[in-house]
Image (cartoon, rainbow, N blue to C red; front, top):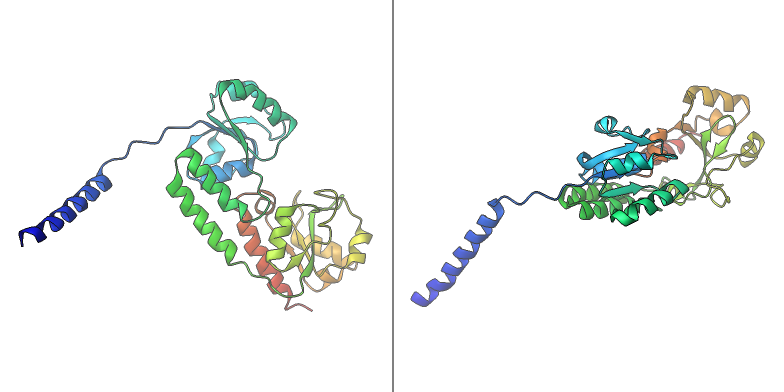
Length: 284
């Protein structure tokens, strides 16, 4: 019997050690000082659980609400390198490389401050970016939880019908612009059973004519209401021009901040567009 007691004692000691480790306060993570150069970068950092570490951002970073109190360093196209340097950043997060970000990177390199980009090419890249930021910033628990939820919602997206419905996305009314060679938006449409007829355009946002859209005769039109345009006004406008999708009520509005910011809220846009395409099936 004495020999049997030793394993029990070892197991008890192991359990006690595990309990002590669980309740022992963990050292606080090293603080960061983050600059974000685009609204989507701000939203991704918040999703990763490190929003409180952002010390500077751009004018249109307005989500979540806490972001409104962050000091501004520029407008997203132009920004003050001197202001950024006075904020003593430890990390700068941008969207896509630009002349301004490349110049800033050259200023930051001798200081050992990295500048990284968050430019997802598919919906799956969004939770991956949240996880990456969590690992870099020491907020893995919050980032992993957010990433799992985003990935679950992305997996739940289902095509509305086969074959795909032709979808024209109106991003500006006067002049008329649409989305073209935009892999992220085109991935979103494909997951919802939609097809962008301008996906092979050489431009990310080509200008098109009303006549071209009428000739194209898309099954669905989705607008992002910039400049005070409303769904009712645009529907009436397209009805006057004879677009069958407008006459049948197959024209929908999407929040432009959800659709055009490649961050977590793009998943909200995907869910809304999938619902719109399902609704369109009931309209002749």
